[in-house]
Length: 163
Image (cartoon, rainbow, N blue to C red):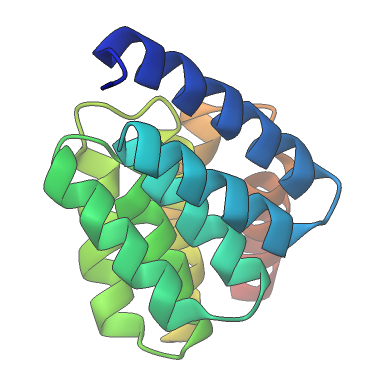
């Protein structure tokens, strides 16, 4: 007997919440397990993005990137996986590729955290020693989220360096 779509979605949501709870406690393997169970019940871009995030905490950036690419294939307008891929590529030292993904995140229609993308763009430009571009991105991040401390710290640190 086949499970109804509604029931599969309910199970997927429960597994997703369990995974998120495990992730918040630092149990990344358990989180990955439950994100995978959620995806088996009902695949969503959010679950794939979070599965990638769990793998990033396990140090597996290549697998994290692959899961985020699946999320993008499910919803190209969803900004989180673009930002996450950009962050993972930065960890791997692939700055030019990271910038490409971070720019996509900054323009994504379904993304309520654009300030993260601009902050990460600032970090990438700073690592490339293009400080004017970095300052500009940090400033955009602050304009979008005035309370976001990492952007404020980075912005003021670079401005002081420039003077």
